[in-house]
Image 1 (tube, rainbow over the protein chains, first blue to last red):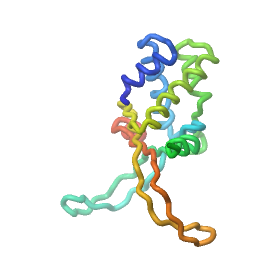
Image 2: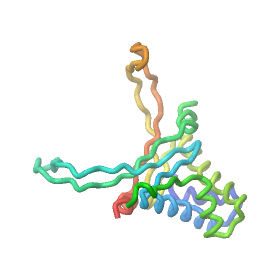
Image 3: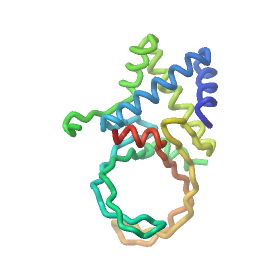
Length: 92
Length: 99
């Protein structure tokens, strides 16, 4: 499923025009992006949570050339699936 | 960034944002957020991945059975084949998080 299919489903489930379903999708995803950009976590019961992991600078290697490089400190979002969804996905 | 100020975004904040920005009533917004999440879940429960541009991709993948150990008793057990959901953030999200 991609975003436009999600919008279609949402517009059907909520009985709302596509235009509004699009606005809903964008608003939710933008709010989530904003939270993660602020370093906040996201916790949605039954679905899962997102946290930002911080990495210090470290010395790595360019896998192609083998040359040593310094990897700058970075932050990465991580998703952990919630208990309910994890159990459901294994219940078939 | 100040670690101490970090907050936790939940369903409640998401539905408040929808009410503020799109003008739906609070009670409708709670239902809207649930439908949004429900649609994502249904797709994954069908075994379909969900690709959301500018945000990221949720994929459902099979994990093969393996031998494991009960950490408490030390007993060897077989972990059955199971499904796992993983999320790969989009390039844009990774960039925004590091801005």
